Length: 191
Image (cartoon, rainbow, N blue to C red; front, side):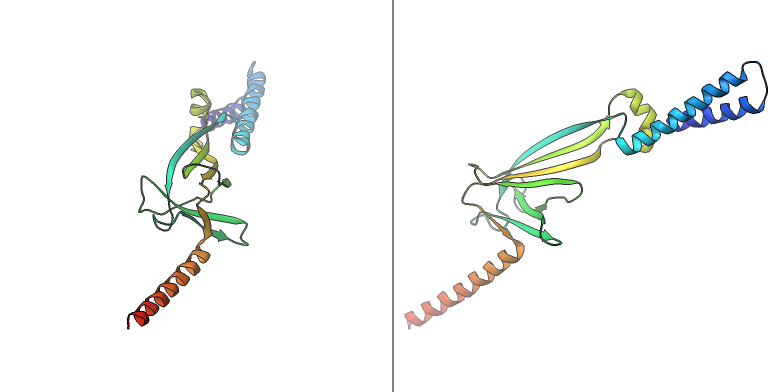
């Protein structure tokens, strides 16, 4: 709607400047002011989310182990130089599907090891329009429910381990070697 208002104000400004008349000059000035306000509104909406407010939703789910149900492990994959991490987790609702923390507009990922049960809390903040008028004026830009930030907080009991995928693969390999060695020893002792 603000684009339509801008176009009408520009057309009125041009029309009332070109065709002389008794009240054309004040109308042309009003059209110029409306044009300026529309441009400022569009720029402010684009850069500072003018006409929008932040809406935060929080979702909490119980965690299952990332590796196997017997081993309480939360896995992560380091990105770049290792300061950023993508966590791999399973929820109690979907224990077979491995989920990842999304990296788009990620605020922080916190791991707290003082909890009684393993759970994850995801706080998502989105921009939504403040009022119906803002929706009418700016809906053409399609920015309703635009993601501002997402925060993951993992609450883990003390018996849980947080391991990188690389370290988990190394441990798995060591466990397989130990199992093979134990099997060999058992065969040798049974002879």
